[in-house]
Image (cartoon, rainbow, N blue to C red; front, side, top):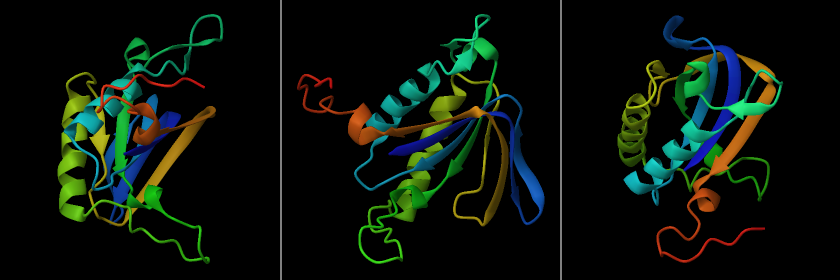
Length: 161
């Protein structure tokens, strides 16, 4: 699972010209899912996402998480986060999850976020969406479950670099 997180002052998603999801202060999160991802992967990624301290405190330090600022989430499913551009100029998306699996896991991920965040909006899975946002900072973070979940499944100790 891959998350591209942008700290925003506002974000919205439109389908066929109609706003179907919008937030003020918070995160716009593009979510990529591969077939190897599971509910356990989603749980670990939700925990990391909601724990990120990338909002400014009273001293101008990035010490506050989403809950501390009452922020919202705008979640957008985006298979293109699994683009493989190593060969040629046309990306391959072979690692992106099959639509039925990805849709189910995206819904699970969204539901898990809703247990902790009051304002969670989403795009429409598989739709042609127009996403607008005002990146605050700018501040953009990339999370990949291959790194976040390293060693957790096997119980092996995590290696720090």
